[in-house]
Length: 403
Image (tube, rainbow, N blue to C red; front, side):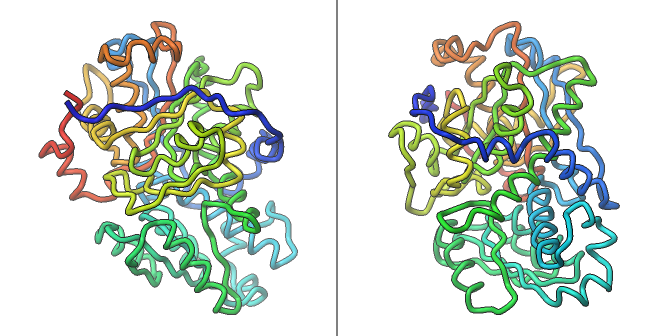
């Protein structure tokens, strides 16, 4: 018997998180989506209906947003990095973001006006690649720091986008601090990070807004099919994605907002521990998990305010949960489509499957209201961005099962 999933119902005292929800409102998201649509690489990523799987799990519908197709980069992260970089450049150029189309951003005229910018960031892989890709397209520079244990494949993919990238001897949060320290030494540089701390909140807010394109697409795709989610499971590292999804659906649906559950890697479950303590908490150490994109120990202060006010449940998931999700998605049932989902992308489906199929979680399933009327929305935030790890899990059974 392997390690159990820990789940807690949100009992945090409520506070004012208005700005975090307002920045994800429909009018703001329309502008963000219009920005992303100006890129020649843009196309709406698929929302995959897993009808046969839903039947096995005893619920009405399962939908999963497949971000493995996003901009040809295999992950959703580029949405946040590209929008934040555009907002920063718009501010430098004294222009409105509505003017910052792809053609304008890549124009010689704009480059001559704003000069050379170096974008510093820390990443477990996908965020750094997204920042490097955006900087390269715009004729700018990127410097990327990755934590100890990062995939060599992900490192080389970042370098292939023209960035200076290296793996440090420290965890993700150490890499964030190093990026900030190194940026402070370089004139004309800026940190583009998807976590926030006191005094660094504007750019992380823009990144969260960039992630809103994925949430808005999924919402509209569901509406086109005549469905509205009753439940959302969204994964979290620092919580920027979870905060963006929660902020978007809270703003869009108000009191009819779906029940939202945040799923984290147990080795880096800073949001779960914050909910448990009912106050902002951090996790230290190596943060060792196969879910590299979720290996973050310090919550985004902006998103934490949104999450503690609007999330229903927080789940701390051992690695086998993500592995289970990867294998289920890779081996579909009936007429369901195959979804190639990486470690961080599949934990939501793994959690749903465990809650639905195993008696040890029956009481929690009831508490969450998961039943034959449930319509569950999930986000597969990455494809096989580390092909070797994907094969290790899907082919060779790394991380086993919960039994």
